[in-house]
Image: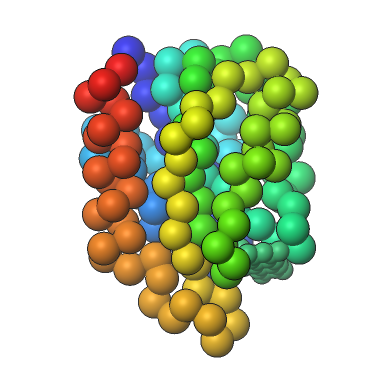
Length: 137
Ligand SMILES: Cc1cc2nc3c(=O)[nH]c(=O)nc-3n(C[C@H](O)[C@H](O)[C@H](O)COP(=O)(O)O)c2cc1C
């Protein structure tokens, strides 16, 4: 089973979760700009909202790499309680990509909000999320 971790970040919050997830499942995390050179049976994709949308880099990644994505597992951070899961699920559907119902989401620091998040506990929870997915698959 091939596992990959890709993420988009602007200030490092999503990257923190990506690295915790990657370490938990024994792979290297890479930005979405790296693409997917080979099929990933499980893709952990990290995305966070910017002005109620996902970045164009995430949209382009899904479009260009759709043939190499087995099942997509969403993770991400945000200032509000809502993740980008629904937005990514819509993009996944448009690209014929299967997205799992499970996701990992936590607060991410933004201006004066949620300082220090994701913190060590958030990263540990993200790692546990990833391990649970891999162990049941
Ligand atoms: C330009 C901009 C727009 C944002 N818009 C939203 C938003 O619409 N909803 C939200 O919950 N958080 C919003 N945020 C907060 C980010 O989603 C949050 O800080 C997230 O942790 C950023 O992750 P990153 O460091 O990986 O880029 C915004 C942040 C920036 C910089």
